[in-house]
Image (tube, rainbow, N blue to C red; front, side, top):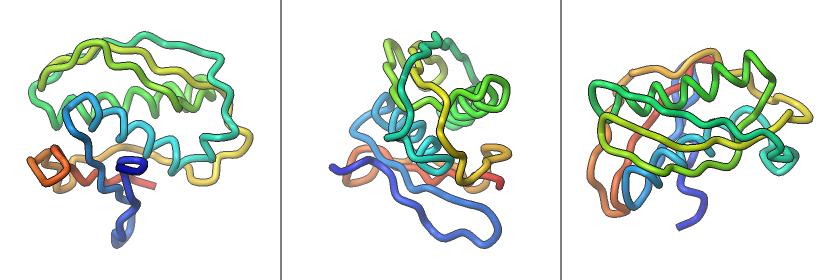
Length: 135
C-alpha cells in the first residue's frame, strides 16, 4: 500500500491525497503526510510521547482537529510527530499517542489545516480524503 499519501497539485497551497483501510489508518497516514510535508521524518528521533484525546462534530472536523493539534504542538514545542498509535477512534472521537522530536530542518512551514473540499469518502483502498494545507 505504500506510504498512504501522495502530494497533489493545488493552486496556491499544498494538498495531500490520503488513504487508509479504515479511519485509524487514514488518520495515521494523514499525520504522517503532514510530517513529511514539513520535514524529513527519517531525521526525527521520537523521544517525546504526547497522549491526545479529541472530540468533534463529524469525521472531517475530527481529522482537521487531529492535524491542527499536531501542527499547534509543533509550533509551540518544536516537536515534529512522526509515529502514531490510535487506541480508539469513531467518527467523532479519537484517543491516541503521537511520538516525535525536533526536526533537523523544517523544509515547508504549514500555517493551517483547511476544510477546503474536505470529504472523507469510500474508495477502492478503503477510505480516501484530500486535505489542503495553508502554507
